Amino acid sequence: MAGTMAGMVVQNALFPDDGLPVNAPSRKLSGIVVPRCTYTEPEVASCGVSTERAAAARGMNIDMYTAKLEHNDRAILEGACDAGFVKIACQEGTDSIVGATIVAERAGDMLAELTLAAQSGSGLAAVARIVHPYPTLGEGIQQCALAWNRARWTKLDSRAA
Image (cartoon, helix red, strand yellow):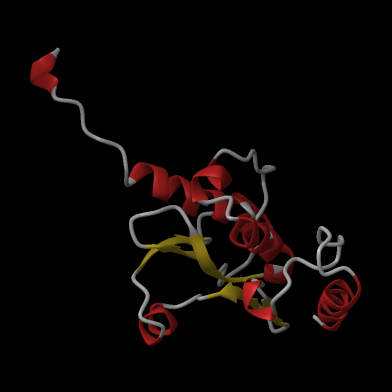
């Protein structure tokens, strides 16, 4: 975080009218999605507005998509007893990611994909279209994204055929 903030200071002081350098995602600290990780077993990693309570405190309405990792093939292969979960928060009714929480082995490594999507505005629909390697815990992220897609499917009228 300190390196990011230093890049922002240099950008704002020396290049106020030019494009952003590689290490400054924004001109304002409030424009950054900051990842955080607690190195416990399992790890707990999150970014942005990552709980319903935090969203309510900010007056935000969100939709939460959750994937438990207990049936994830990589978790099973590694013998993870309490495999964890992935939760992704989106602005209500949209695929705009406002935050996420991951509880799993190497959750901090997994969080980068969601931090990038939230920072860049890519959206959960774009995450659903990414091919995730198999077998990995990262498939939990894809499962949340696919849940967003499934929530928008419409049923076919069998009488119309």
